[in-house]
View (tube, rainbow, N blue to C red):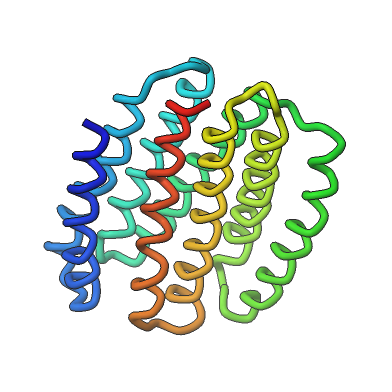
Length: 215
């Protein structure tokens, strides 16, 4: 069953890239929503060797589904609602990661370079943000904490290595995809943002969904 969800997502991805390039909201919304529903479905049909991980990760995936819907809508204010939805998604991921694997001293070593990278990104964006400066600043803090949480999962040897690698890879893919969203929204629009950002984003969500069954 999980193979079917991945195949369907791979079929829909070129369609999404096409309608995104043509900026057709009425076509973007159903295609994007369908792919997002597929990563939620993938999570639901996974085995659950660590039940708490599933229970916290699933609402995060659902919040991201909501964010995808908001970002697919053409109204300018929908970007803000999308940001809030993804922020909520990251908060659930943070709870999921740290509840499953409380942070150790090694995570602090990871936190410093991740925080430096987040600060550099924010400084690069500052002059483009306008009234979105505070929401974006909060978002960067939250996603930085989320990435550190994914490293905390990686560093817990009691969990199966494939699941740990899937969780970290998914979180990092999500993080990098957000850079392309920020670039497209605040710095410079262009097809490269979608061509690279969308597969990274959806790939990351599917990796996180699959991590449920491999921990």
